[in-house]
Image: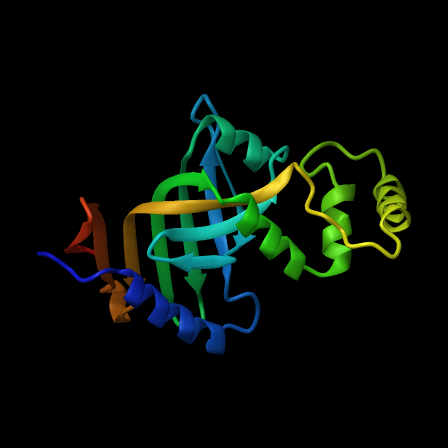
Length: 193
């Protein structure tokens, strides 16, 4: 069966989650895999979305950044427990433009901006004090100045190939709607629970 664009359904569910989820309605699990296919996942925050995809930001030298550099295939999972809903997204990443990354970075709190400079995300840390010292050095370096976006920090856009909407139902008779990209459109089907 041919379907309308699934982004309208995503927006509807996301709007509901923003009013019902007590914390971080934009939190999503990001699954990546390294060059050998070994998977890993972690929570990240959705920072933009629309028909062109779903955006998140990270440090390129982090574990996820290194995995994304060798394997662009990812999966996202939104789980909104208060709504008893999940959305699974599978697709490929591409970097956002420098302009998009700069604009988002400028909206972050100053402390978060400085932290992006101070952190060697995912690498071994000798002590918490070392990180705090690096953070203090960044505070001093940018005292009275705007904090620019670090060259090792930017965003990715996930262009979905598959989007599945899962709704909890009584007796585990769940409802699952699958949208698969078909050229410029989408094909919709139902899945058994």
